[in-house]
Image (cartoon, rainbow, N blue to C red; front, side, top):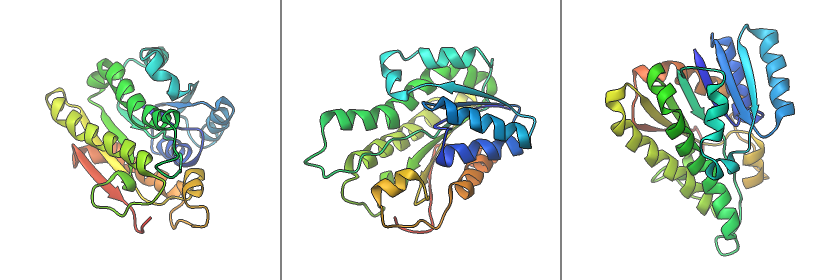
Length: 235
């Protein structure tokens, strides 16, 4: 299996890659701004598996400025993709009336525009692999869930990613592509600590990473175009 994971250098993405490596992935391309942490991840993967882990240092905020660049880097290493996990995200927790236009654009750029453009430019490789595209959304972007102050634009960007998932599943169903979104609840990450500094989540990055890895490999047989809440608590 050839797998691409964004936001791979820490937290959930870091654990997703480790779980995928243990489950028999042949080649994993990990994408993050932090090349040093990606190299640490490569070292850990090599200790526990035979996976070929390829680190690519890239800031997803730059993708809208040159939408073909990241796909070009990925295409240097694989001719097909079996799984794409759009895990990278950014969160700015501020009252609605104080958040700046730049901060809004930053969240939508990373949380929505970058995954959309990456999917678009990797379509030839995804179609060859009959891929499963897993978009990591948030329970905050899940309709009917409890909402929290300061997260309006973050939640809206994640909701946009979820709706995109449903639309693409319909548009590319005849190409053999499967699109699903996981709307994650509370996981003990740096991002959660920023939004809820006094809250301890019941789920660790390792636990959620293992779940996402298993879903990415096996969920394609059971789900398409679905937005699946993954949470045992609120938030």
